[in-house]
Length: 135
View 1 (cartoon, rainbow, N blue to C red):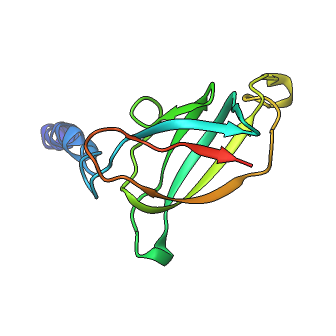
View 2: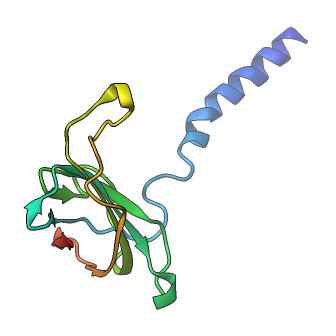
């Protein structure tokens, strides 16, 4: 009886790596990396985030993606996930980059409210360049 339980536990533990591989990165639609500049009032945004949400109203569906903005630049191949390409709603958050952990402002003070715009993201194996101006 003890040997049978031990065997079942060993078999279950052996299956964990296989189960852990389910839902991997290679599943789902192809993703394409993009990079570019992000400015606010003509100046590079010191820190922030950029989110790419497929625009379902224009027939584009799939997973959203994001990247960090550092010194006015973002690059989904370095910090984030690639987009699926096509029409997207883009949401940009910008901060002054002066972190204040005591007040839970890890990227600093917000420079503006969430900025929303639309963009047709490229479908290319080469990194596409898409710049954004927050006004």
